[in-house]
Figure: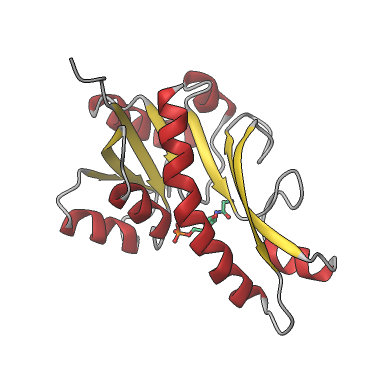
Length: 187
Ligand code: GAR
């Protein structure tokens, strides 16, 4: 009998290039739902064009608990087992994280534990780092603080700007995330 395929839900807020990489390189997992806090996210349009199930819920004007309950219900309706955050730019509440304890992973554009939070590339360059990169980690209540599952490094080159560095890191993200998600689903 074939091994069961883990159902993954991906949360995005924008462009969704990591989500596309997770869809296009899916092995050992199946993308069951793509959800967003931004109904007009470019990644949602891409997902719909590719016949993937989508769910959007704006958090505007409703309590956070209500917003998250809607996302939670959509994920459970789609039988999602693992959640992959991919450029999802909203903090999940402690309650949500507790309900999905050990089942949420995230990609972050720095070599954690360095440069948690925002503006990671500018901060790495200002600090005079020679290398930058990305990390996939388990999501806990601590921002960008859970177990690191995998990392990829790229050089910081003379003449780099935060944007050129971000583009180099993003390519590394697209290679790293599908591999680490597949490993995580198999463990
Ligand atoms: C990616 O670089 C991802 O690492 C970062 O946002 C970008 C999303 O791009 N995530 C964070 O900063 C999370 N704190 P994408 O929408 O094209 O995948």
